[in-house]
Length: 278
Image 1: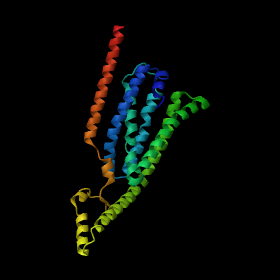
Image 2 (image 1 turned 45 degrees about the vertical axis):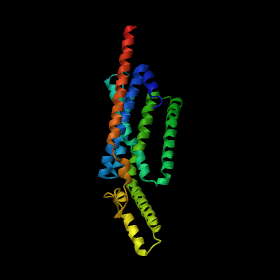
Image 3 (image 1 turned 90 degrees about the vertical axis):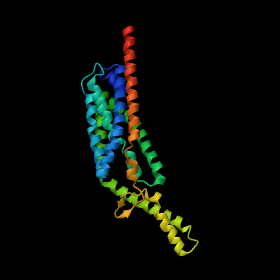
C-alpha cells in the first residue's frame, strides 16, 4: 500500500486530495476491522480453536475482492460513495485476520521466547513492506505491466497463498496450544511445589499442610476456570486471556474514530469554504 495514494491520483483519475481522503477511509476501515476481528476471533475460538485459522483464511481470501474492485474498475473523477465503500471494506476485511496473528504466536510459545517470536514476526512484516514495492517496480520494469495491474496481481497471488497457509494452520494450532498449555501447567505446579518445599524445615506433616494450603489459595484458584487439557488442569488459559474482547478499549477506539471523522469533515468543509471565497 506504499503506492496506493499515488496510484489513485495518477492511474485512477482522482485528485491528490480525493486520493488522500480515500486512503483515510481505508485507515478507518482498518481500525474497524481490528476491533471486529478481535471480537469475531474470540467467538471463533470459543466455538472451536481450529475455527480461528479458518476464519482468518476466509477473511484474507475475501479481502482480495474490494481491492481488485477499487483498482481494477473504471477511473474516478471524485471520491464518491463507490470508491469509499471499496476502500473501507478492503481495509476492514484485511484487518480481520491480522489482529489475531499475535495471540496465536503468544499461545504457542513459552513466556521466555515470546518477545523474540513477536520481534521476528515484526521483522518479517517490515521486510514484506519493503519487498512488496520492490516486486511491483520489478514487474513494471521487466514485464511492462501497469501499476494497477501489478497491484491486482500482487494482492491476488500473495493473499491467496496466505489464505492457504492460514487454512493449514487449523490442523497444527490446536496441537501446539495444547502442548504449550501442558508445559506451562507443569512449570507452574513445579514452581509452587518448590515454594512449598522451602517451608519444609519442620515436620513432614507441617510440610504437607503448607503445600496443601498453597495449592488451595484463592488467588491461585481465581485463575482456574474449566480449562482442562486432556484431563490435566492448567492454572489459567492463555488463550482466553489473550483473545478476550476488551469492551472499554473498543469504546475508546470508537470515540477516537468518531473524533477523526469529525476532524476530516471539518477539514473538507474548510477547504470548500476557502475555494468558494477564492
